[in-house]
Every structure is written in C-alpha cells, then in structure tokens.
Image (cartoon, rainbow, N blue to C red; front, side, top):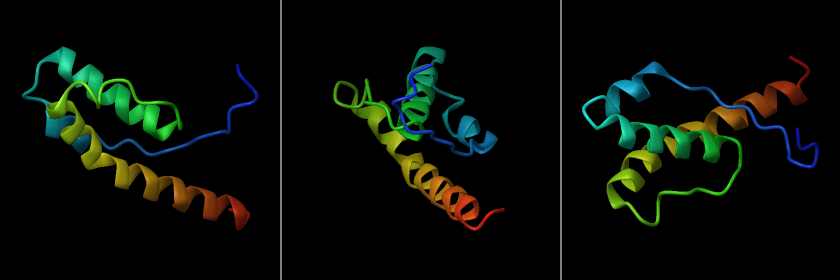
Length: 79
C-alpha cells in the first residue's frame, strides 16, 4: 500500500450501475473504473479517448465529490 497517497472514500450507489446496464460489459468496466479512479483521486484513463465513456463517467463525478465532502466534514466533526 502506498502511504504517500491520501486516503479517499466515496459512496457508490446501485443506481449508477442501473444507468449503464445497457452498455457492453467492457464499457461498463471502463466507466466504473473511471468512477473509482476519480473517487480515489487517481489519474483517469479513458475519458480523453472515448467521448461516450466520458459522458457517462462525468455524470457521477459531482456525486462522488459531494459524498467525499460530506464524509470529510463528518470526520472533522468527530462522527
């Protein structure tokens, strides 16, 4: 485990999977990977090369950021 990376936590909702269920499994895997990379503050891999994936992935980035902000505030408040 790389201790130099900041700890990152985010919430993943089952509705997100529902929103991409009609895509191929390969496309779903890439989108889910982008959500995870964004949530873990890692570089994205597929957004520049695949506009469809970019669109689906970016739809959840705001929710990921909001869940991280909420979590960090709760931690800071000692909850």
